[in-house]
Image (cartoon, rainbow, N blue to C red):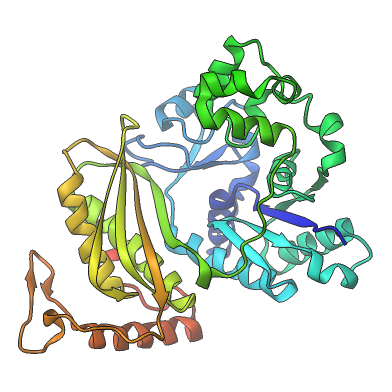
Length: 411
């Protein structure tokens, strides 16, 4: 049987998850049914839109735009602050449910993943019925909805899941692209951003079909290698497979677009701590240690910078990753307000491999760091992380939280 790939995407994840939590706490208003967004600061009205309800979308509000713009479009707009601990927990619940159906998953973000349906195809009458079963189970057990795209190519499955929403299944097999995909504007194509769209329009390429029929040499001349990639995607060419084994990943990372720009080192460190804990937890779940850590910054000017360093010893410890990320951030940051922060681990090795200790792991040499106390030895840190993971596994991801994460730091 030819491979069948599902792309599963939560409908307006942040807003849906916040709406369900508000209802659980006794709210009588479902944020999904009113003009509402997630992001920014309700009192100060700054930041960007991280997620929007369908009624908010009707006002022309788009993800990523400044909240002040969204407020102009809809003066009665309800603004809800993001809750990243909640989102991490709900994402974990979703991935666990999907793993019970088929373990061949590739999670690509907090709210979307690919599933290789091929191994379980005999359990269902058809891929469409399997997708319907998955959507119904998520809706019943978790309370939110997803879209599922089905195809024989990953990029086409991704495109299909972005068709009409919410709570729907769409197919986009290779033989369907002329009918279903080519009439769409080029802006709908996966990875075709604003700058690429402008260039294509200047070349009088308006639809995905126009792009598919264009000479790849012309696209390469104007968009370099990205032009060739867009041409391949427009023609449904994609040989990538569902990467189901985290242990073989080249790296594990996480990034976050801030609800409001970080303007102080303390605000940035607060976000870096959350990211470090997320990356460290994913490393431990994958049975991996990282030898290299990198930090990415996107400023509110949309300029990106990054820096990386090699560790003395491979680690999956939150404390070590956090300290390293802070040091990298201090080297990078030029004082410009920060819109996005990311931490990535790479050069992964199995956690079962022996680790050579550094001098700092000897109990007689406690390293002191600015405002962070003595450094913990690698062995002690590993025991602590193991204990915390056990508590979270038994009582939930939010059962134990660092005190410094209970409230964001402020001047």
